[in-house]
Length: 209
Image (cartoon, rainbow, N blue to C red):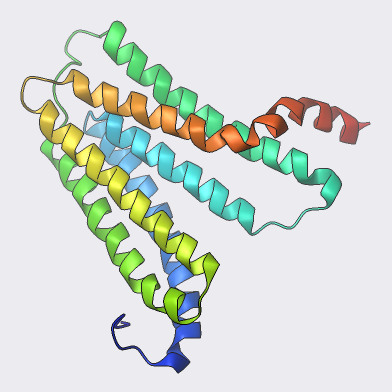
């Protein structure tokens, strides 16, 4: 593994490529793990964190796509619509838990859901640490964005871990509030594609014709 304080310059290129692959694998694995643990562990905040990671994965995938100018709006519309769907799913589940509670479903999340959130914090910080050195040595804006994305993911999971911990002390509703916050952040993430989302149906009709 790379040592960010003293790696060899000739290794920066391979480490950068490995870092991008590692970041993608980490994002996919954690999204699946958090989704599973959040749903079965009774934590809407952790489940919504998985949806947030899925939204980041969609954006990450879209950056690698090259499309013709006339299809850009369609691509952005599909991406934005998918993120908005994730956002509204998180918002729907959180509002349902807050205002239309089901008897017996108001218990705090399982502690192993907290463990998964902490694993996500550690894993994302580790990936960000791994990528930091080649990002600096190569002056790569792309690698710096990936490193920043992993640090952001770690902070989100740290927030979720705090929410799950607080929900253990007679405040189970705070877990639903955490999911609500995640949903709003996904809406903000999709805001850049708002125009494309609105024009997406027209683009589909135009290309179908």
